[in-house]
Image: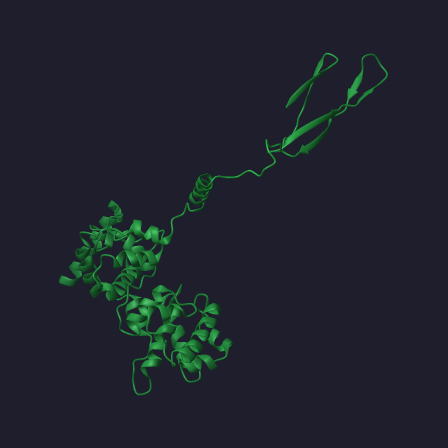
Length: 347
């Protein structure tokens, strides 16, 4: 804002300046006078803005020192890397070995003995046909892989039904060659209840071609090989190694294992994702437990430790869980239920 005076009165005008340039302003004020005593009307000031090239002391181009350039690059890197990488997150979130993990694990095992969860009867490792005179080991392994690929974002009962449909409706059953030869519409109709069935149809058909051409009508026998297949992630790869190849290469971490491990305080990777949880668990959990931990926690998550409204008052490890929320009302209700069950059993 600038001011100027004319005929004893002050007037103001606004000027927009452009950075790194000299701005010269030429003000042209036109006035129109009308008949009448001391009557005049002033129009708006017309501004002409001319940009001039910045003047430097010399005509030589400005040179930036190497130290200045280094500091500028450092600042840019600091601004561009505000978010930590997954490796950095995992490194910071890997806890020390929990002091009571064995006690928690044993309590969960005892609880799961008397409880049958969907994973116990319809888990992916139970959906493949056992090896027989008709079913070769290659066919059985491929069926396990297909079941795992279908299980993503899908409940166990829906996955089990989809695998059953493929075995019954595909000419020749659920084999590599029958999947390759199957009509895409028929295959998709068999798994139509599965989450993202359109994408999975394409993934499984492409996987069948790769397994036939590259792996001699078998599935890959390494985690890296399995993860190179379309639609196969880390969880599927590690579970497939355990179930299909009987190799303990790592822990299969799904949403249940990821959620419950963080609730129990076994790791702090809730925001980092399941893969970070796997790395955290494997850093302290003995390898002998890697195979059983998935089914154990998945069944617990399906029956008690739900994602929403977990039954903390009925949980066998609520006293050892740092995330347990037990209200007085729920505790009284749980005690009544326990007493009624005990009286019924003793009567």
